[in-house]
Length: 357
Image 1 (cartoon, rainbow, N blue to C red):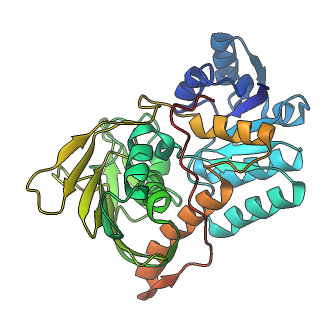
Image 2 (image 1 turned 90 degrees about the vertical axis):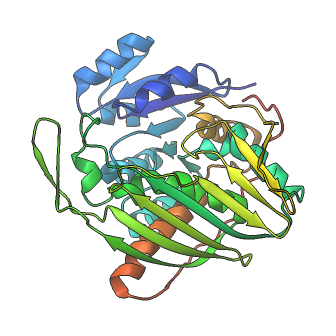
């Protein structure tokens, strides 16, 4: 099997797991890294025995096939477009971009150049959600009619070393954690046709453990309703304003049963099922691989799709549709009306069981 060379841009916290996991996938090989802080790139390069570059040097290296874009959200579209202009495929951490217009420009440029765009999250390719998809496909709950999704926390400033951007444009719980939940819902139920939402900035400033103030510029509590093309209705809450909850992560309700789907920020289980007429949920064994932290799986699938000339699963159209859904909640709240989505997607193909990239 062929292997594609990957250049990583953005050597922050999230890069660690990508560096570690890339070694497990046959389709990709991270050969270089870059960061605005060149010393940080050199540190990572030495740790993983690869080349350290400036960003421009990496983009100009013709031996690199794919750019893995792990920059902060505000830089996602700029770096993605630069990679595409230099003839490289690009895989971007979530979200695809901050604005819809920038996201659309990335997708259009990729099509013009004949290159591929992919993006996180790829957790929906893990054993937990893939098992759930297969159960629904095989009719265990009948026709899906509704779904719920909940992410509730008290924010990131108590633990994250650089929390400020979470409270600026492009941040907040919806743009930070919403991609996991919405990607999971869309992979299960398909395209969303319209949304509505209510948003709130509950606290105008947040404080780090040392007392530093962070002004809040983005809603930190978002409640949304999703109308899917297949007729199902979804409900989602993402919040940085909760000190605890007992809500499920994701549940899908069907004509003949309910499926409890695991945390979409993880790759494993548990998957639980309750059949019509039964009183209790039962655990369902996972029938797919990748149940540990497998970030990079979507990148490996994209690399293999380039080699095999097929569609990849964590693709640009999917990441753009998820971005439009998230913006739709905020727009609907601001304008006091439903937001009609303009984008549509095909549900990503379920993985072959025990697939190894």
